[in-house]
Image: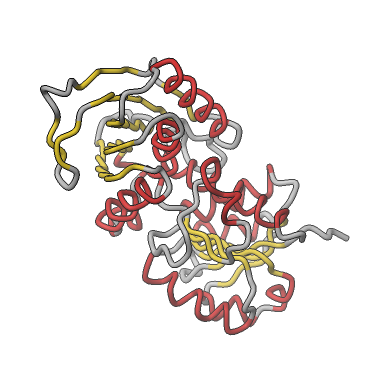
Length: 311
Protein backbone atom coordinates (compact mmCIF):
# COMPACT_ATOMS: atom_id res chain seq x y z
CA UNK A 1 0.00 0.00 0.00
CA UNK A 2 1.36 3.42 -0.97
CA UNK A 3 2.48 5.74 1.84
CA UNK A 4 3.13 8.72 -0.44
CA UNK A 5 1.34 11.96 0.51
CA UNK A 6 -1.86 12.29 -1.46
CA UNK A 7 -2.80 15.42 -3.40
CA UNK A 8 -6.05 16.99 -4.48
CA UNK A 9 -6.42 19.43 -7.35
CA UNK A 10 -9.22 21.99 -7.28
CA UNK A 11 -9.91 23.06 -10.83
CA UNK A 12 -10.47 20.62 -13.69
CA UNK A 13 -9.48 22.99 -16.50
CA UNK A 14 -6.28 22.99 -18.55
CA UNK A 15 -3.91 23.73 -15.65
CA UNK A 16 -5.51 21.29 -13.25
CA UNK A 17 -5.62 18.50 -15.82
CA UNK A 18 -2.01 19.01 -16.88
CA UNK A 19 -0.94 19.01 -13.24
CA UNK A 20 -2.81 15.78 -12.61
CA UNK A 21 -1.04 14.08 -15.49
CA UNK A 22 2.34 15.38 -14.33
CA UNK A 23 1.80 13.93 -10.86
CA UNK A 24 0.64 10.58 -12.24
CA UNK A 25 3.47 10.26 -14.76
CA UNK A 26 6.46 11.98 -13.19
CA UNK A 27 6.17 12.34 -9.42
CA UNK A 28 7.98 9.94 -7.10
CA UNK A 29 6.84 11.97 -4.08
CA UNK A 30 3.12 12.67 -4.45
CA UNK A 31 0.18 10.42 -5.27
CA UNK A 32 -2.99 11.69 -6.93
CA UNK A 33 -6.02 11.55 -4.67
CA UNK A 34 -8.87 13.67 -6.02
CA UNK A 35 -9.63 16.07 -8.86
CA UNK A 36 -12.28 18.67 -8.04
CA UNK A 37 -14.43 20.59 -10.52
CA UNK A 38 -17.82 22.25 -10.82
CA UNK A 39 -18.84 20.98 -14.28
CA UNK A 40 -19.75 17.29 -14.28
CA UNK A 41 -19.15 17.13 -18.02
CA UNK A 42 -15.69 18.75 -18.03
CA UNK A 43 -12.93 17.03 -19.98
CA UNK A 44 -10.65 17.21 -16.94
CA UNK A 45 -12.99 15.23 -14.71
CA UNK A 46 -13.61 12.71 -17.48
CA UNK A 47 -9.88 12.18 -17.97
CA UNK A 48 -9.34 11.85 -14.23
CA UNK A 49 -11.97 9.12 -13.99
CA UNK A 50 -10.44 7.27 -16.95
CA UNK A 51 -7.06 7.39 -15.18
CA UNK A 52 -8.51 5.97 -11.98
CA UNK A 53 -8.55 9.20 -9.97
CA UNK A 54 -11.49 10.01 -7.70
CA UNK A 55 -13.48 13.08 -8.70
CA UNK A 56 -16.23 15.43 -7.54
CA UNK A 57 -18.09 18.11 -9.48
CA UNK A 58 -19.35 19.79 -6.29
CA UNK A 59 -16.37 22.05 -5.69
CA UNK A 60 -14.49 22.27 -2.41
CA UNK A 61 -17.64 21.35 -0.45
CA UNK A 62 -17.77 18.08 -2.35
CA UNK A 63 -14.09 17.45 -1.66
CA UNK A 64 -14.33 17.76 2.12
CA UNK A 65 -17.27 15.33 2.15
CA UNK A 66 -15.39 12.60 0.24
CA UNK A 67 -13.87 9.69 2.17
CA UNK A 68 -10.67 10.27 0.18
CA UNK A 69 -10.27 13.68 1.82
CA UNK A 70 -9.08 11.98 5.01
CA UNK A 71 -5.78 11.11 3.32
CA UNK A 72 -5.27 14.40 1.43
CA UNK A 73 -2.19 16.31 2.62
CA UNK A 74 -1.60 18.71 -0.29
CA UNK A 75 -4.16 20.73 -2.23
CA UNK A 76 -3.36 22.54 -5.48
CA UNK A 77 -5.81 25.34 -6.28
CA UNK A 78 -6.07 26.04 -10.01
CA UNK A 79 -9.29 28.05 -9.95
CA UNK A 80 -9.34 31.85 -9.60
CA UNK A 81 -8.19 34.50 -7.12
CA UNK A 82 -11.67 34.97 -5.65
CA UNK A 83 -12.40 31.25 -5.47
CA UNK A 84 -9.11 30.52 -3.71
CA UNK A 85 -9.98 32.72 -0.74
CA UNK A 86 -13.20 30.74 -0.25
CA UNK A 87 -11.54 27.39 -0.86
CA UNK A 88 -8.90 28.04 1.76
CA UNK A 89 -11.48 28.95 4.40
CA UNK A 90 -13.43 25.74 3.78
CA UNK A 91 -10.31 23.55 3.79
CA UNK A 92 -8.91 25.11 6.98
CA UNK A 93 -12.18 24.45 8.79
CA UNK A 94 -11.63 20.73 8.24
CA UNK A 95 -7.82 20.50 8.21
CA UNK A 96 -6.12 23.58 9.72
CA UNK A 97 -2.62 22.44 8.71
CA UNK A 98 -3.30 21.24 5.19
CA UNK A 99 -0.66 22.34 2.63
CA UNK A 100 -2.00 24.64 -0.08
CA UNK A 101 -0.28 25.43 -3.37
CA UNK A 102 -2.01 28.44 -4.92
CA UNK A 103 -1.82 28.72 -8.71
CA UNK A 104 -4.13 31.75 -8.77
CA UNK A 105 -3.19 35.43 -8.32
CA UNK A 106 -4.86 35.50 -4.86
CA UNK A 107 -1.50 35.69 -3.04
CA UNK A 108 -2.87 34.89 0.41
CA UNK A 109 0.46 33.26 1.17
CA UNK A 110 3.98 34.40 0.24
CA UNK A 111 5.11 34.45 -3.38
CA UNK A 112 7.15 31.38 -4.24
CA UNK A 113 9.57 30.93 -7.14
CA UNK A 114 11.24 27.55 -6.46
CA UNK A 115 14.82 28.37 -7.53
CA UNK A 116 14.79 31.73 -5.75
CA UNK A 117 13.04 31.49 -2.39
CA UNK A 118 11.46 28.07 -1.83
CA UNK A 119 13.90 27.21 0.96
CA UNK A 120 12.73 30.28 2.90
CA UNK A 121 9.11 29.13 2.70
CA UNK A 122 9.33 25.55 3.88
CA UNK A 123 7.15 26.24 6.92
CA UNK A 124 4.42 28.07 5.02
CA UNK A 125 1.08 26.29 4.70
CA UNK A 126 -0.07 28.37 1.73
CA UNK A 127 2.35 29.47 -0.96
CA UNK A 128 1.48 31.45 -4.08
CA UNK A 129 3.02 30.52 -7.42
CA UNK A 130 2.84 34.14 -8.69
CA UNK A 131 2.08 33.91 -12.44
CA UNK A 132 3.48 32.18 -15.50
CA UNK A 133 5.38 35.35 -16.39
CA UNK A 134 6.70 35.60 -12.86
CA UNK A 135 7.93 32.00 -12.83
CA UNK A 136 9.71 32.58 -16.14
CA UNK A 137 11.31 35.96 -15.43
CA UNK A 138 11.81 36.49 -11.70
CA UNK A 139 14.70 33.97 -11.62
CA UNK A 140 16.51 36.19 -14.14
CA UNK A 141 15.96 39.33 -12.06
CA UNK A 142 17.11 37.47 -8.96
CA UNK A 143 20.22 36.28 -10.79
CA UNK A 144 21.22 39.87 -11.55
CA UNK A 145 20.39 40.87 -7.97
CA UNK A 146 22.92 38.34 -6.73
CA UNK A 147 25.66 40.33 -8.47
CA UNK A 148 24.50 43.96 -8.33
CA UNK A 149 21.78 46.16 -6.83
CA UNK A 150 18.81 46.22 -9.22
CA UNK A 151 17.08 49.59 -9.56
CA UNK A 152 14.40 48.53 -12.01
CA UNK A 153 13.21 45.40 -13.81
CA UNK A 154 10.62 45.18 -16.55
CA UNK A 155 9.29 41.95 -18.03
CA UNK A 156 7.21 41.31 -21.12
CA UNK A 157 5.54 37.89 -21.28
CA UNK A 158 4.27 36.98 -24.74
CA UNK A 159 2.03 33.94 -24.93
CA UNK A 160 -0.10 32.35 -27.61
CA UNK A 161 -3.73 33.48 -27.55
CA UNK A 162 -4.69 29.83 -27.78
CA UNK A 163 -3.00 29.11 -24.44
CA UNK A 164 -4.83 31.94 -22.68
CA UNK A 165 -8.01 30.41 -21.33
CA UNK A 166 -10.90 32.14 -19.57
CA UNK A 167 -9.03 32.19 -16.24
CA UNK A 168 -5.97 33.88 -17.72
CA UNK A 169 -8.05 36.46 -19.57
CA UNK A 170 -10.19 37.23 -16.52
CA UNK A 171 -7.12 37.78 -14.35
CA UNK A 172 -4.94 39.97 -16.58
CA UNK A 173 -5.05 42.91 -14.15
CA UNK A 174 -4.13 40.59 -11.30
CA UNK A 175 -1.34 39.13 -13.48
CA UNK A 176 0.35 42.50 -13.95
CA UNK A 177 -0.08 43.56 -10.32
CA UNK A 178 1.02 40.25 -8.80
CA UNK A 179 3.99 39.85 -11.12
CA UNK A 180 5.17 43.42 -10.57
CA UNK A 181 5.07 43.00 -6.80
CA UNK A 182 6.91 39.68 -6.95
CA UNK A 183 9.63 41.15 -9.19
CA UNK A 184 10.36 43.43 -6.26
CA UNK A 185 9.79 41.19 -3.22
CA UNK A 186 11.28 37.99 -4.68
CA UNK A 187 13.44 39.19 -7.56
CA UNK A 188 15.06 41.96 -5.55
CA UNK A 189 14.31 44.92 -7.82
CA UNK A 190 13.65 48.33 -6.30
CA UNK A 191 10.84 48.78 -8.82
CA UNK A 192 9.17 46.20 -11.06
CA UNK A 193 6.83 46.30 -14.02
CA UNK A 194 5.08 43.48 -15.86
CA UNK A 195 3.38 43.38 -19.26
CA UNK A 196 1.52 40.46 -20.85
CA UNK A 197 0.94 40.11 -24.58
CA UNK A 198 -1.55 37.63 -26.09
CA UNK A 199 -0.16 36.76 -29.51
CA UNK A 200 -2.78 35.61 -32.07
CA UNK A 201 -0.19 34.26 -34.54
CA UNK A 202 -0.93 31.01 -36.37
CA UNK A 203 0.56 28.53 -36.00
CA UNK A 204 0.77 29.35 -32.28
CA UNK A 205 4.15 30.55 -31.01
CA UNK A 206 6.01 29.30 -27.98
CA UNK A 207 6.01 31.46 -24.85
CA UNK A 208 8.64 34.20 -25.07
CA UNK A 209 9.76 36.38 -22.17
CA UNK A 210 11.87 39.50 -22.37
CA UNK A 211 13.54 40.80 -19.23
CA UNK A 212 15.12 44.24 -18.95
CA UNK A 213 17.12 44.95 -15.81
CA UNK A 214 18.73 48.24 -14.81
CA UNK A 215 21.34 47.76 -12.12
CA UNK A 216 24.47 49.28 -10.73
CA UNK A 217 27.56 48.77 -12.84
CA UNK A 218 28.84 45.23 -12.45
CA UNK A 219 31.14 42.70 -14.06
CA UNK A 220 29.28 41.59 -17.18
CA UNK A 221 30.79 38.12 -17.15
CA UNK A 222 29.61 37.59 -13.57
CA UNK A 223 26.10 38.79 -14.42
CA UNK A 224 25.91 36.54 -17.48
CA UNK A 225 27.24 33.56 -15.52
CA UNK A 226 24.69 34.12 -12.75
CA UNK A 227 21.84 34.26 -15.29
CA UNK A 228 23.03 31.14 -17.12
CA UNK A 229 23.31 29.23 -13.84
CA UNK A 230 19.79 30.27 -12.88
CA UNK A 231 18.41 29.24 -16.28
CA UNK A 232 19.94 25.80 -15.84
CA UNK A 233 18.38 25.53 -12.37
CA UNK A 234 14.90 26.34 -13.70
CA UNK A 235 15.49 23.88 -16.55
CA UNK A 236 15.82 21.04 -14.07
CA UNK A 237 12.07 21.16 -13.42
CA UNK A 238 10.99 22.91 -16.65
CA UNK A 239 13.04 21.16 -19.38
CA UNK A 240 11.73 23.48 -22.11
CA UNK A 241 13.02 26.63 -20.38
CA UNK A 242 16.02 28.13 -22.15
CA UNK A 243 17.87 31.27 -23.20
CA UNK A 244 16.86 32.28 -26.72
CA UNK A 245 20.13 34.14 -27.32
CA UNK A 246 23.15 35.43 -25.45
CA UNK A 247 22.61 37.93 -22.66
CA UNK A 248 22.87 41.51 -23.96
CA UNK A 249 24.44 44.45 -22.10
CA UNK A 250 24.42 48.22 -22.46
CA UNK A 251 26.05 50.78 -20.19
CA UNK A 252 23.89 53.75 -19.22
CA UNK A 253 26.35 56.63 -18.61
CA UNK A 254 26.09 58.96 -15.62
CA UNK A 255 25.70 61.98 -17.91
CA UNK A 256 22.76 60.40 -19.80
CA UNK A 257 20.68 58.55 -17.21
CA UNK A 258 17.30 56.93 -17.85
CA UNK A 259 14.32 58.39 -16.01
CA UNK A 260 12.39 55.53 -14.40
CA UNK A 261 8.97 56.43 -12.96
CA UNK A 262 8.92 55.69 -9.25
CA UNK A 263 12.70 55.44 -9.10
CA UNK A 264 14.14 58.55 -10.72
CA UNK A 265 17.15 58.96 -12.94
CA UNK A 266 19.20 55.79 -13.23
CA UNK A 267 22.57 55.04 -14.74
CA UNK A 268 24.59 51.84 -14.66
CA UNK A 269 24.16 48.55 -16.50
CA UNK A 270 21.18 47.53 -18.62
CA UNK A 271 20.88 43.77 -19.01
CA UNK A 272 18.52 42.31 -21.61
CA UNK A 273 17.56 38.64 -21.44
CA UNK A 274 15.40 36.68 -23.88
CA UNK A 275 13.76 33.49 -22.66
CA UNK A 276 11.77 30.82 -24.48
CA UNK A 277 9.54 28.28 -22.73
CA UNK A 278 8.40 25.13 -24.51
CA UNK A 279 5.83 22.99 -22.76
CA UNK A 280 6.36 19.31 -22.02
CA UNK A 281 3.05 18.48 -23.78
CA UNK A 282 1.83 16.14 -21.04
CA UNK A 283 -1.71 17.36 -21.67
CA UNK A 284 -1.36 20.84 -23.13
CA UNK A 285 0.27 21.51 -26.51
CA UNK A 286 3.97 22.34 -26.55
CA UNK A 287 3.31 26.01 -27.33
CA UNK A 288 1.53 26.41 -23.97
CA UNK A 289 4.78 26.90 -22.08
CA UNK A 290 3.09 29.55 -19.97
CA UNK A 291 0.80 26.94 -18.44
CA UNK A 292 3.46 24.23 -18.30
CA UNK A 293 5.86 26.39 -16.27
CA UNK A 294 3.12 27.02 -13.70
CA UNK A 295 2.26 23.35 -13.23
CA UNK A 296 5.94 22.33 -13.23
CA UNK A 297 6.85 24.97 -10.65
CA UNK A 298 3.84 24.05 -8.51
CA UNK A 299 4.75 20.36 -8.53
CA UNK A 300 8.41 21.05 -7.72
CA UNK A 301 7.31 23.30 -4.87
CA UNK A 302 4.87 20.79 -3.41
CA UNK A 303 7.41 17.96 -3.53
CA UNK A 304 10.02 20.06 -1.70
CA UNK A 305 7.52 21.33 0.88
CA UNK A 306 6.42 17.80 1.68
CA UNK A 307 10.04 16.70 2.11
CA UNK A 308 10.90 19.82 4.12
CA UNK A 309 8.08 19.27 6.57
CA UNK A 310 9.19 15.72 7.21
CA UNK A 311 6.17 13.98 5.74
